[in-house]
Length: 261
Image (cartoon, rainbow, N blue to C red):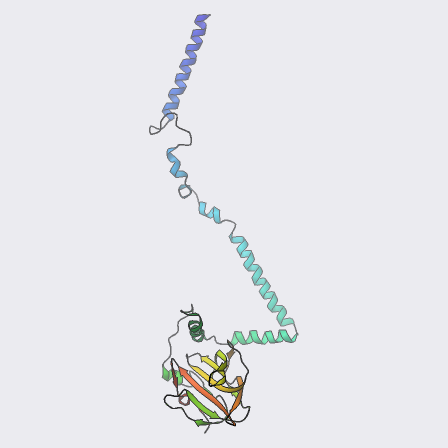
């Protein structure tokens, strides 16, 4: 009986040695026996950028669909709003229709907006760059059309060292824009009273002073011959102060604008 127990114990020890021997052979020569299972040589391969497959796409999956759905919804809402606006006969809707039509047909003044942005906000706007035309091209009728701001005659012409000219006109005569432009100022100026200042596409400014009433507001976009206000009275005479500024200097507006004699 003792011999049988010894035989069983012997066979059990041989099996244990065999099992231990196979385990040692399966372990990497660089890995110590008994090291934890999670300590592997291929640990670096399990980092996200070493994993096989397009793991980056799996992270972004599902974000594109909600964004596309939101954009589609906004586009549909805008289209529906415009359609309902043009189907309505309410006076406010008709005014909005006229405004939309005007904006769609208007040539956008990129250079004027860039100058306004630089003056009020500093730096340069992210807008297309246009080469400024020469004075000869700017003064040409084909490039830019100038009109007299008010009906009347020049009482005091432009002189060196002065800012502008004085035009004698009729009481409450309409004062109009000499060219298309952007209203950069509409208010009281010292020495000129009620004044409107326009900035035009070629970078010039026109000043309209001594106005009785101002009919535009700052940031308005006006067209040629659009009403800016009415002429005021100076020394018992209806007069308009008119000036043209190019860069930092005031120039003679009679060089480009025809005034009545």
